[in-house]
Image (cartoon, rainbow over all chains, first blue to last red; front, top):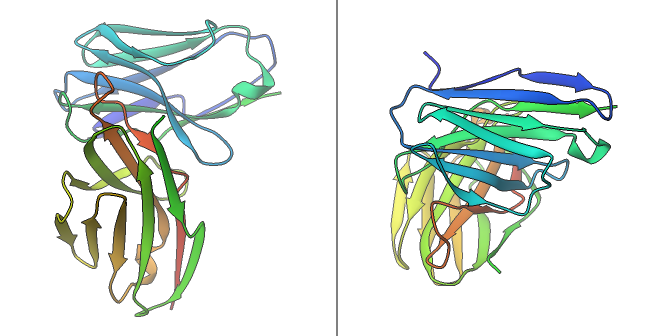
Length: 111
Length: 112
């Protein structure tokens, strides 16, 4: 049973489209995250939610909007996709300030 | 600004050839240094957390150590299945929440 699962695993779309990535964790953790891994393999935090409250919001374009309906789910919606948005997006969860558990990633390709 | 630099970028070892990966960091008050392993097409997998200089942790063929400026991941008698990218990350006292700053990673290839 997957601890942190994200869908879809692969996403190919045209510039200007809107897309969403969904994430669910069954670990009972209270904090969830979105990280972006670019072509140089750097993992950078985008957002973090603790019990549905946004607590980390890095310098990310307004086109990216996270939404946490409950503490087990964190979705990422991206409007007006650009070429530079192509990357692997990882969802993660933790119990407060404990170690992060990552999903398998969603590879987004914008054409 | 918190910064993590990992070296080397890539490392090729023969099976059984021990070596070390380096993680140098600059952080405003360290509140944890983390090592992760990432296999191709997968998410990072947690290995260790170190909190203070002098601390060491071990898991199978891996041993992580920490000083005030850097951390080492020692790999003893590696096997091909140890091939992966190893990521280092730090958490700062100055950052709210559980924000980790990652290095670019070291790609390890172990040949049999």
